[in-house]
Image 1 (cartoon, one colour):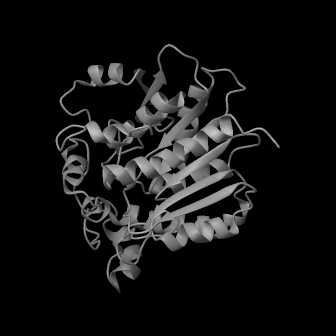
Image 2: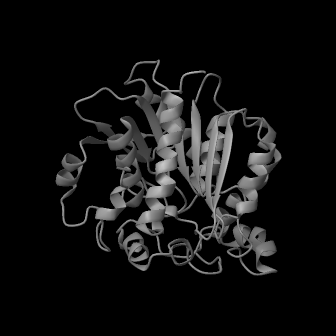
Amino acid sequence: MAARHPIAEADEKSPFGKLSAEEFYAKHGVSHETGTYTNPRGLNIFHQSWTPTGRDPVGIVCVVHGFTGESSWLVQLTAVFFAEHGGFAVCGVDHQGHGFSDGLRAHVPDIEPVVDDCVAVFDAFRRRFPAALPRFLYAESLGGAIALLIHLRTEPPGWAGAVLNGAMCAVSDKFKPAWPLEHLLWLAAKVAPTWPIVPTRGTIPDVSFRVEWKRRLAVASPRRPRQRPRPATALELLRVCRELQARFEEVTLPLLIVHGSEDRVCDPAGVEELHRRAASADKTLHLHPGLWHQLVGESDADVDLVFGEMLRWLLDRVNPPPMN
């Protein structure tokens, strides 16, 4: 029987459905730990992990969430999925201004300190396990851009691969502010960098989650920001896309790129270009017809399909099939 993603057990109020968090983790055979890393900027950065109970992990998966997301709530259901069904030790971190971490809510005026925090937390997590265990990145949306930046600054052998889910390699014109407002972001960022005033075309949950009750669950998180993006943040996210687009040929790690063809937040053309230009010898692009930005927000059948392919891809690189 195919592995079921735990989103099937959630309801519109809680990712754990009617269970407590402790009951949920026990049901899925994972141990859960939390911690805090104080970064050089004096911010407390929250992180957590999920490891399979009663067996040694087969590898490590480091989770990078997207803009306005967090390592808890929906993303942790995917972490539990990888731990339970794949046997991976999984670690997630809340970026500054997100989830339980310090910082102005949903404000990322410079991506490099966010990358620094991820590297520090993920390196510390890796040191808890045998050095021979392969280490992978799993990233969603903005997290996909951050994962690529982590890879580009990591010395070989570094990472064994990355799964990019709805990666932000280009922001969709269907979501950007209407012309000419996009071209005035620099002025807004100079005058009022932190004001939540950027008029995107729809909210992220509204254009990301196809299934209505999953959209309600996403916004039910008490830590999810609901205001418009801040100008300095919006400007930085667009700059990050341009930087990555100029460096696609430098990407060498194994890649599984999974994206919805109807993504109105992160343009599918961006990941198609990444797949075409990346120097990776092992690279796969699955562009799923009709699916939206948040793949966990699709029907349960589609969720099991797309996350099942992610799990198989990871396991194939932990236990490669024998050569004929």
